[in-house]
Image 1 (cartoon, rainbow, N blue to C red):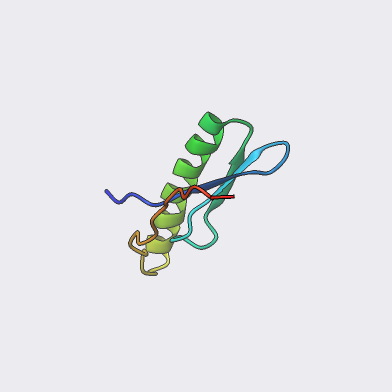
Image 2: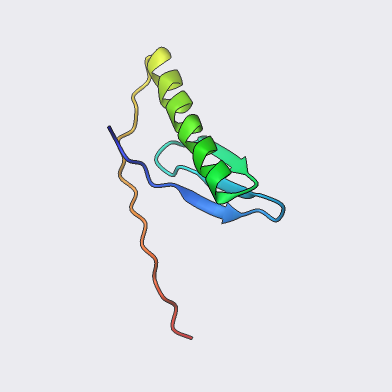
Length: 71
């Protein structure tokens, strides 16, 4: 089982999530729990589609770091 980095952004009235290693794999939700469940489903569907069309499934390579900004 592969683990992909997911970026979650505040989009005003909801949250938006995307997967840098799976271009086009995005989802949204009104809460952290909802967007997390939705992006998990989107990842599974995205990979399933890649396999169905005979395309290579990108291996996870992105990493996420939280860096404190000194200001």
